[in-house]
Image 1 (spheres, rainbow, N blue to C red):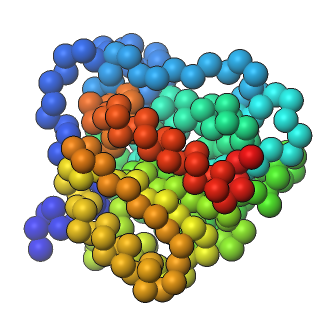
Image 2: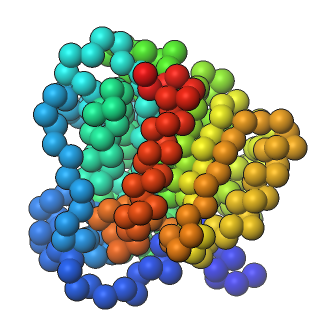
Length: 296
């Protein structure tokens, strides 16, 4: 078995983009000041910035079996019982990109919550080397992940969120979390996985008992999968295998593969950003969540 075979597919895709030129990017100090993580590589000089006008935003501490889990949330200021959308983050922690996505969802009318479910591992957004980051995130079990997301939903209900309209979106490792959670919680109405890995390394079996493809027959919510044709860790053939597995199990899912788009194509702060794919994917996501009555 090669070293590549032991890497999670999402990380293979990330490493493929790590050697790009650092021109037109923020300095390290500027990136830190802006709230971005350094392990993801150079930060683009002009990432998308979503304001909080008309929103109520903030941080929270959510009770879990592992302690008080930090979270960032955003919701429309005057909305009563807004739908709840969980934002499952990349491996880089709860940094500015994920917070900005949370505000974007709030602008669509959602009570969006980004839980920092790696909090027991430390502040991942302050780790600058991916080699130090990966052992931490790879130690997070699926059982722990699902429990943390469940606790997040319970907290949202106490804050006036309408959990009968529950959705989840996620990016990279968070995209994998979408598949896992949609196979676990029958209350989820819809999920959207942005380039979430579908086949796990054999070395992770004790931590992640079943990969998303193995969980296809157990999906309890319709999922939209958004992938790039140039993703080095999640090739289109693998996406087609997942599509077939879901269809064979009679599950509702749709996929879109973007020509020329790499892994991380939505991450507007990274060199992998592909504007055309990212913009269309956001529209596809919004339409999917409306189709399944998560968003109005």
